Image (cartoon, rainbow, N blue to C red):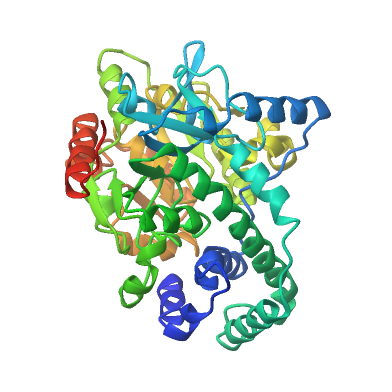
Length: 466
């Protein structure tokens, strides 16, 4: 498997030995991007994270809200969550953060700091007790422009780039790109260190829950927390597998990287925790919001008449072809919906105008309310949605391709088909997937489990919440 080949390339102490004044391995900060670039090139993938265009009013609104609800307004002695606004889903007339809100509602120990979504805050929020974390990054960015990089540090960066080129991790034509990225990251890290150090000390944080903590971009905050014996937790927010770039490291390097990665990881269930290679301790807690929506679905008799096509964002041309074929083969008995990756929505018409011409509707509503009415789910890419769909239907399909073939060894619980014609045949069969191991994928009792492990970590680390 290609990813296993990449892991072998980084099984190298010298690769991890390069660092600058921030003392964080340079490789940790760029490994995800390097690996992703190599995968994009090998499998001819597109970039799922697209940039939108902001108007002057939107920028002003963003800045004002970042200041009004800035993180320094929070009280001291909290369990602080750095969460992403992209996890918000609409529930009636307000938005709920599906990853955190159900766990922390009415519990004064917790404080959620939520990030914007491409410089826009999701509002109105059901949870009124939130502040926004973006001011940290605005200030860090501004300060970073004042930081000079010495000749000595630039020489270290040159040596590092020459070394990773010699290992075949980047090509010559990418050298300038990664040089600029490393310098930018280094200056950004130094400025973040100053800001986060003051914040952590002032607010006396008890436990830190940090999203995307294994990608390398949050190493400064993690390092600061660990220097002060503050436990660091990451909660699973999406798909994980043996080939996930951010959640699999060589075990030989665990001692090198453990100071820059979380102490604990809360997974959705045993299926996921068995497919990770990280230095932290893993606890299987479940998925509170999925549990909540699946339980509500039992009390409804929704007509299952939707064929749902799920995009992961990196294979847009394949979804256009699939949508065209599906639209021609199924009559009015089925409603065909296409669900883009959240990061594609800003450029939806640029990528998928043809899908709209086929008479297929784009679905950006609450996913779980759509799944309640879905008969068939189809994707070309591994996505958490395929696993979530198993809670609602037994017809869940992944269409094999050279990229997906990297993940088939993960023992996937849904049906993998090799071509669209095979998909059509199996869509008309009954009991395609028997959900016998659903608790293996989704640990039941998520809220109870979450609170139990928070208490366990508090006692293990002697965290005082008074």
